[in-house]
Image 1 (cartoon, rainbow, N blue to C red):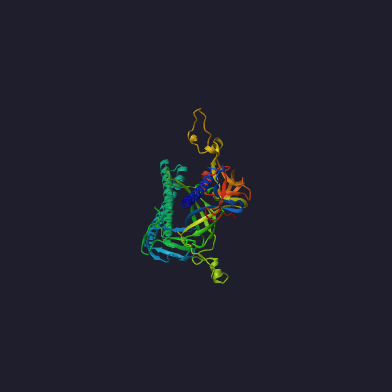
Image 2 (cartoon, rainbow, N blue to C red; image 1 turned 120 degrees about the vertical axis):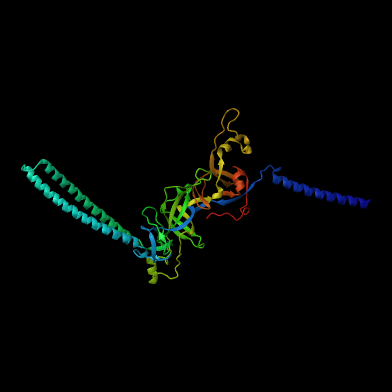
Amino acid sequence: MSKQKKGSTKKLLIFCGVLIVLLGAGAVLARSMGWIGGEEAGKTVETAEAKYKTITQVVSASGKIQPEVEVIMRPDVSGEIIALNVEEGDFIRQNDLMLRIRPDIYQSRIEEINASLLTQKARLQQAKASLLEAESVFRKQKMLYEKELTSESAFVQAQTQFKSQQANHEAAKYQVQSVEAQLQQAKEELQKTIIRAPKDGTVSKLAVEQGERVLGNTQTTGTEMMRIADMNHMEVQVEVNENDIVNVSVGDTANIQVDAYPERTFKGIVTEIANSAMISGQGTSEQVTNYEVKIRISTPHNLDMAASEEIEKRAAGELSQNRFSPNFKPGMSATVDVQTETVRQVVAIPIQSVTVRDLSQINKNSETNADSTSSDSAKTEEGSFIPKEDLRKVVFIIREGKAERQEVKTGISDNTHVQVLSGIENGDQIVIGSYRILSKELNDGDKVNINNNKFGAVASSE
């Protein structure tokens, strides 16, 4: 009997021990779920401290590098290229000979017009002689008519012949002037068969070869032969969206990143902003409106591609031979960050801490039924209208272990932080994550548990 009692006692103790463990685990679970204890379970959040910071607002855009000045060379006369003295990439000076167009046709034209001019001058002399003869007859008839020694009809006939010869003489003079103008034009066309450089620059594009025929600008757009560019003054042409263009001004500085130089950043300045919009996908849901902006690259560049003072100084030893000088070519891809505005030592918070809430719904419904679907209808059964949306920017501040909703006014922002104009003071601890809790679940007065290592690295505000 004693052995049976000992076995029963042992089993009872084991059963009691298991029961105690289960009850303890259940109590812990019930407390954590809020079933017992009467306290609300806190939401786990990440926080950061509002601090003074310098913020620079940036507008980013992508585009291509192009010369600030690029001249497209087209011939004024048509013909065959018989001499081509430049190659693509050559640096040329103003008035340097670039190419010649066969002049034979234009020389023949000059000879033909010269012969016509001599003919017209001979006709002018004949007209002058006829005029002198008619004038002499008219004077004689006039004198006889005044003395009543000739008839009136003879006098009128002499007068008419004199005026006719005067008109012929004037016509002959104008004909000579017309042929002389044709001769001058023909000489100018002959001169245009020799094409010289209009300015200093680099041949950035050569589109013709010796022996090709080109079309002049006389009646239609002529053949593009080459382009001459000032390669040591390059710019980036970008398209900025209509929402950002209002923040960009002429004179704003910019940081430029060129795909060909991934490890370097170059300086630039906004020089031109287009007034005309560039619209793509017009009339569709994908319509985009952009404006072209030009940013001059202020970092010295292309010193070995164009004559400049820098090259002369380098040759004289005034500049370091090891000084880096990028060589930009037209068409290179680049990204610019235009610094549109900077504010210094202002209260700043991480961008993700600012969320938007509809205060009309929050004020209308209690916190327990804030997500009620009664607001889905535009009109109640009694006929009263539900208040319109009242969207406000808010931030949640941690005070005494709870989240306090605070309406804020914001200023400019950079890639990570936003300026706070009102609602937040330096040193306030604010909620910055997680996104799901901050944007949807967190309400005013909710208890929170701070864990700045839960969602990644601890947030900081410089």
